[in-house]
Length: 122
Image (tube, rainbow, N blue to C red):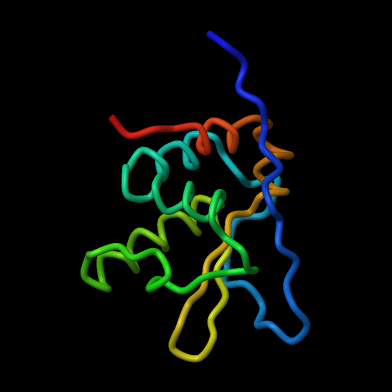
């Protein structure tokens, strides 16, 4: 099996004046089984891959993903990703925006993000 090269993922720093992140696990609290459990769902894996490969800004609202699911379903999936430590969310009024915790995941689980980026649904 060929080695997967790590693409240069963007770790978008927050712009001045953005809200504080919602509660999330600290770096030393990230657990592989929780991260993999969150990523075991194909929709959540797709969300993370899209953020890694297509995000041009710091964070994105649910509508940016173009997923045809009820809002309550998407809210659940984003919460699972945040509580596992995969994503970071900030509340902007009524809207929550998400980004991948690139630096934290690369530090804690080197190579994981490259595997996610290389994943292809079959």
